[in-house]
Image 1 (cartoon, helix red, strand yellow):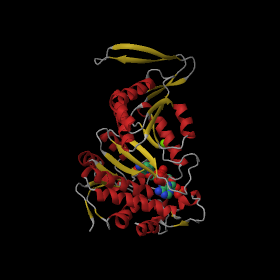
Image 2 (spheres, rainbow, N blue to C red):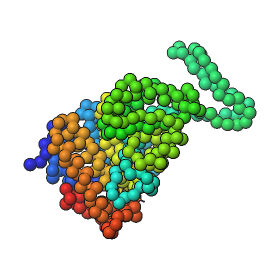
Image 3 (tube, rainbow, N blue to C red):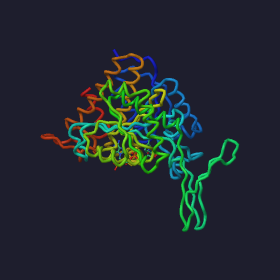
Length: 400
Ligand code: NAP
Ligand code: MG
């Protein structure tokens, strides 16, 4: 008998090659074992355009209602996509929209398999990276300044009356200026999301910023993290043998390189943008990187960290076979099923998700994988075999 579910998962379908994999994963790996219950939202670009992007907002609202979502990669349209899909508008990034509605933090974690060696040889355990997704340069105001002009920070009260003013620079040459901001509330919910995730996943937390240079701005991040930690988390961390460490961002970078991994690395917005790509690359393939958006009130949206793998899709559409890595998308499903099982008290569902993860990893460890992993795979006595997208899923199903 198939495993029964209680609450539906919010299912967000997507675009291109990952949309193809999405159907196959359900058909080949999940539906034979689970009586899958989902509330389906088609976030494919065609339907986003048709619904004037309302479907994205509805899917995020549904995530707030049910608590757990699984999302396929989606196209963020640019000018070329507007033409390709004859779009009514250059719709915003669905991930951005969902993140704004859930006010969440994104955690990215590599999937580790024996034989796929990270470029940094010391890294034995996953380094999970949390990126603050609000403010700083991502909502900055910038301007070019002419020689002889002056730039100030001016603070006004709620009626617009000036209360403080600081000179940024009196320009004796042409130059540039930038104004950035953040909010205590956003930093605080970021800290809470990070500490909750770390407790749930048994990870210590490393956070670095540049408070020695940025004595007010970055220092505020440091203070809020310390306050939140000592007020609500220190005891719980200690009870589990975990810790929180704040140090300078440069020091964190050095320590991460020397470490064996296995921590949650918390980054400010820009640091997270840059470092997540570095960490992902160092662990091997984008196809092995999962991502989960966690809101401060405990709503979860699981996805792969990579995009829609466009080049593979065009090849697929022209009838060629592709060897696209589905691991991160499989893990998005298992993450969501496991969380749903936990919340609804269905241990069979959690066990199934674990089994599917193990079957996936074992398939790779025994030498069966997609093309992206072949050059990375080194294991005594095993010559890796390259499978196409569907063969790989069928091989996992055999194991399962
Ligand atoms: P991408 O889809 O991640 O692909 C970049 C390249 O990385 C691919 O061409 C492929 O290299 C390799 N790759 C990524 N995932 C792979 C996988 N699972 N298996 C094998 N190879 C993989 O990023 P992109 O080309 O920059 O973006 C394509 C579309 O995805 C864009 O429309 C973008 O807006 C969207 N996107 C969506 C999300 C999201 O929904 N979260 C995230 C990023 C991008 P080779 O072609 O060399 O094999
Ligand atoms: Mg980046």
